[in-house]
Amino acid sequence: MYSSASMFFSSLHRASTATNMHFFQRSFATAASHIVPMQLPSKMVVYFNDLWPLLYSASTVWWETHIWYILPDEVKSIHLQNHYLNLLSPNEKENVLKIQEGEVQKRALLARALVRSTISRYLTQCQIDPQALKFKKNMFGKPELDLQNSSELCLPPLQFNISHSSSLIACGVTLHSPIGIDVEEKTRKIKNNIIAFAKRFFSPNEIEVLSAISDPERQRQEFIKLWTLKEAYVKALGRGFSAVPFNTFTIRFDKTATGSRLPGCKTYEACEISVESCNDPENCSSNVTFALMELSGSHYAAVCMEKDTSFKGAGSLPMKLNVWRTIPYVEDECVSGTEAALPINGFAQANVKFPQT
Image (cartoon, rainbow, N blue to C red; front, side):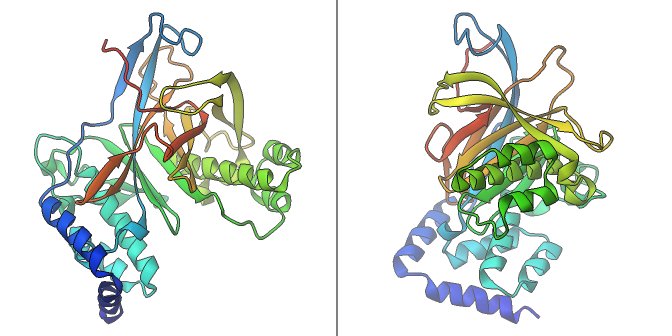
């Protein structure tokens, strides 16, 4: 039944060079028994005195979002992939091993292993075995932690979402607030005429914005950014494209400051990214916050999460992003504030330390 999958793992093992195998086996051996634990994503109330007086008000709230991403090309060890396979549930393992094409199968394996290893990192009252995690899908097919049937694991109310391209897999994690994440390759080609394609999926306002861009390359890049934000939005709502068509809402960029230089980030024109419903207010919500960034120098990544309405007078508030490149059980690298995680538009804040309140 699993002969094709076995052939894939065997061929991958033979194809790996001795040097690469030595590196991953050595690193895997030193880290195989555990992964580095993490504190839960937090909500921080920050009070400013004379710090950044032109950027934000005297006090504000930062909702923390954690992003973990893996580059499939960096995972070459067959032993490590076999370990990842053992993290999966029997049903997940069967679904992965049914995939015939080698690279697609590998990405499916890494995606499930990334979710399980990431969630098991977060500190709780008891240690969590990644394989023991239980998941369910909502009525629209969005995967969620099955907290009701996992009470023995002492799980916190984590929310997660995953996205992948052929060369990058990313998992976003928040506490309490639903999250959506989407990643798209910056070099993604659009076969059709961009405006003709946009007319099939985008709102009239978005089509107008794209039509005003005369440079074809810039128009293509802005199209990809919009698509990424819209994907993240419908995933945060938990409904997906079929339930919330892209042309039923508009993504807007509203300038809030120019030339702002945030610690750890390049100078860029700051914009608040917002959403408004065109003709389907029942299925669309404006109570969300966005972040858009370049990830690993090769992808656009959009994050959308629901705002916490428990804080009175919060208004439009920033999202604090912490980003890690990972090979689970081998290596974790915080890339917040580096060239690997650059904010583009919105209030993405990279690894900034604030005074304790």
